[in-house]
Length: 197
Image 1 (tube, rainbow, N blue to C red):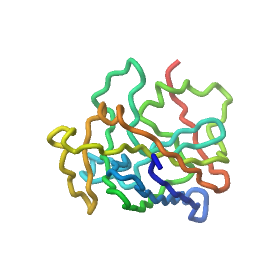
Image 2: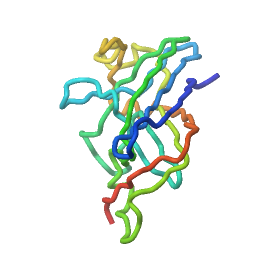
Image 3: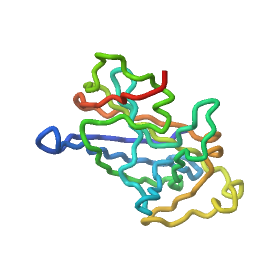
């Protein structure tokens, strides 16, 4: 076994379409002999707290990618504002469950979306139905804590979890991604309308 194990499920809750929400629950298990860092926690500076509902959302053809992890800037883009998630430490054999809610319809949001996607052409639909849903989690093996920068060697205890903060360049060089399909019906989405031509 060379990867973490992710089991995920989701359901739609609510009545009218303007009050419906997607509830996503996922369980991460570390079957490896070394600790791992799962990059699924991000700090909300405006609230001065962890953002429990943070999720990058990207539409790719007929599927929606729900992503938690570090999203590297595109080639040629220098950014000191790139959001960097915390690495949640899972020791060997440890399992953790996370649940979050997202309003429906899903709206695309991803740090580099305006550079990645051209604007919608006239007449292209903004609202779409997405029959396939996937959860993508970024993670890495924590080989040696003494190989980390001084400020990152000891995890911080935040909301009962042990979190390491790493520089985006460190994460980009080590991050792997594990995906899990969320079997459910089609979800409504609103496409990102902006972009650069």
